[in-house]
Length: 277
Image (cartoon, rainbow, N blue to C red; front, side):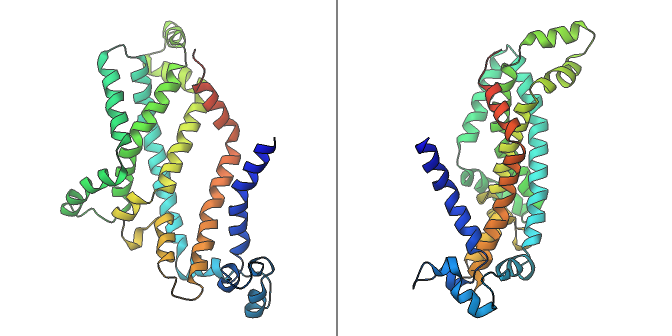
């Protein structure tokens, strides 16, 4: 109990500190004179007349157009998660029901591909993307992220499908279902928590990615994580670093909401994947 309490404090304090500091001015949050300025907002009161200010959020979302990066992130995440789950469920189900030797080697090949550093994979894509004049746009990043994410999705869903007895497939086909109907009407509803869990991990991969989006997207099409990094590159401008702090909070809050909303499905999916048959 003591360990869990210490771990919870250690995990939540950095975010709560950043959340609190995002409503202060730079002179308070990064004060070298007294760290308590970040709590009481001495300089914030002097500069704005109040202990809290939303200048960091206004600067990030309006002046630096962080809203555009948020929209780009939403589009990338939606496409990557949807395509990854669509292909992953079909491939994972087929491989889990196959008794052929090639199914094993396909999974091994997918695992090797997934284990490779992202920067190695992206560097191989750059030249053809430049030659085809498709560098810098969102569909290009989506295609690469799906390619990188797909092996993990297939492996994870494959393990979930293995936990579902084949008797369900056979019973459904005896009742008149085709193989695909058995998959769609019987198997997917049974392992829906596993699909949700896999979808969440696919979401996190696309949402938090930096290497792929930073290398393949231009300034106009940046997603949130590279956009935050660009704010950190302007620290010589007074107050600009608070744009990054506000953007970090803005990008983190949806993750908390998502995990809280799907916590039951996540736990159920992880538990289902650990139980055989």
